[in-house]
Length: 455
Image (tube, rainbow, N blue to C red):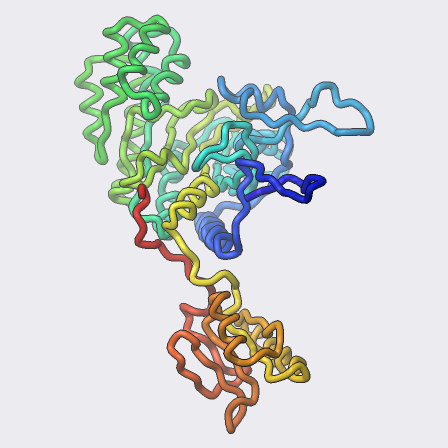
């Protein structure tokens, strides 16, 4: 939990929306980040990091809610900055688009990048929603034209990532913005963007309220019903195409969207069976999406909402002469962990990386203990030396509190050192130059707990 500086009374008070993890929770976060980074790199994505601030006018041009989300940045002293011309970025896509424009002459296209970084969003904090959070993004951008096969590749990468997490079953919901765009135009709706924004609220407010908002915005009740009928189509195979056709609406953009989404689902069926579904209610609220859009949920915990989303954008990055279309997807790392850790659904086997505690017989033995620890560390075995030369029972209890599985006793045996597994009580002769712990004890393990997520 984050804190403000202490008051004159010495009391500290929390600042909501800025999570800080305990050591065991931080181990969980680090393992998740390691999996994400390693998987992104396995798929050929290169790492970049962008600055934390962007011009406010660029941040505020990305959708109806963007203005409300921006944390403005200005100097407290040393001059004036005209009402804070900069803001902290609230996602990675906007700064990435700027990065591409600034570095286009130095990048090889199609450019595949990943970015794991903090972002800031000025919204009301609640469970799973934070003001400071970590996102993990991948994007592919190209010059002038982006091949549609990249839109099918994105969810395969995410399926690979999530299959390595101890989070249970998940589903990646996919739509193509061209489908509702063409459908709405085909039934005579002029305000396509406004209609998309309303339909995007389906999960939050339900179909009755969505219909009321649609009618209030100028659509007829019949048009509103047709919009809801389209949004109700969902399939894990290609049957969604016939279901849309059965609604009797025709438009060239609708045809294009159906073909595009069918290609994505067909690829998912072949390479990530059961993980992708066509879900035509998915719209995404930001205006820059122009093609495929994605959202990811945990099966059985749909009330938690989406943890991973994104889509295709054709005009976000453009210098007026050249356009750099792209497609990307973002994992809300802090959102996932906030709920999983907060509900006790994932745990770390210990609160320290150390697998071994080197015990002390007395204070004069510290130098020898450090020699043992150094030898273990050189072979990649994390360890620490006992903080004090207390009784061995007290040193063992210290290791137990920290979750350290082994205690090393220099010179304890007739032939030299011994190491004890304090869980089983087994104690055996060992040499710091050759002993290795079981592989499952070498680093902390992160596992899914048998807790009730909704309890």
